[in-house]
Structures are given as C-alpha cells and as structure tokens.
Length: 170
Image (tube, rainbow, N blue to C red; front, top):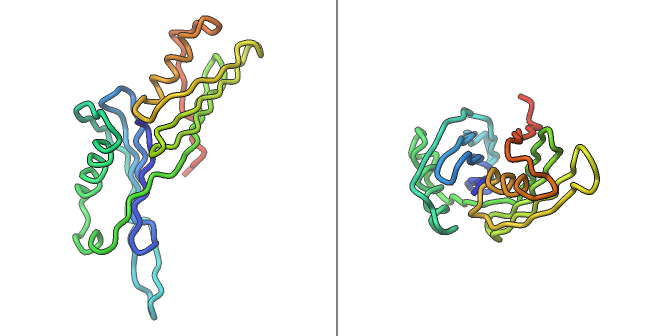
C-alpha cells in the first residue's frame, strides 16, 4: 500500500503525496503542495506552497480502486483555494524504489502500485547465503513485506528494525 501519488494540472506538478504505512490501516503521509502561477504570455511557474508530514488512518482498503478513491478524497481535503484545484487534474502513481537499512542488511523494494507488483531484494550484512528476494502485490505494506523477509528461516530476525533511507535531505 506504500505509494507515491503525483497530482498534475495542465502538465505541471501540483502535489506529491507519499504514503508510508506502519500497519494495514495507518501510517504517515508526506505532502508537498506546489503553487502554479501564470508569469506572462502563457508561461507558468511552479513553486512549493507548503510541505508537511501527518499521521493518517482509514478502514482496511481491499483493492487498488478503493485506494485510488481514498487518495483522491485525501487530496481534495487539502486547505487550498478551489481555483488551484479546478481544471484538468491528473492523478498518477509512478513506479518507485524504496530502500530500507537495518542490522540484518539492506532491503531494496521496487514497486509499481498500479501494476500491483512489489519486488524485494535483500543484501545481508552478515553473509551472502542470507541474501534473498521476495515478491508481493501492492496491497501489502512495505513493513509487512520486510516482516515476511525476517521470518525466513535463513534470517530469523523477528526483532529487526528497518529504517527507510531518505535521500531528500532538505
């Protein structure tokens, strides 16, 4: 269920929303909302209006269609002028790469939300025989997928804590 939603208006990025789940029904969401302004002669500029992170929760979502409906409602609840949200708005979910690190090693998750596909590749910090791969659908959270990884007999690390590696150092 972890995903990135990109909202564009007339080809310009209006918002980027990153959902990071800690359970099947809750987590944190990072929201960036841009302001699109007309400069002159049809030229437009985009600049960050605000950015924040907030906790979220919802009922269990059982399909990608349910998640897309939740995301659309979530976006339209933002406190922006209605004029900014009017017009030709497009919602897209790009494929994304997540990286998690922890004591047992590094886990890379390549996810394509709309294709309902997640591939995890784990590189062990202790020995190469502990390297492993798993696959999942988009409805499984990244934390649940990492939990399945740690339940493998070769790793057996139920208490392992993975932290998301964030390359955006603001």
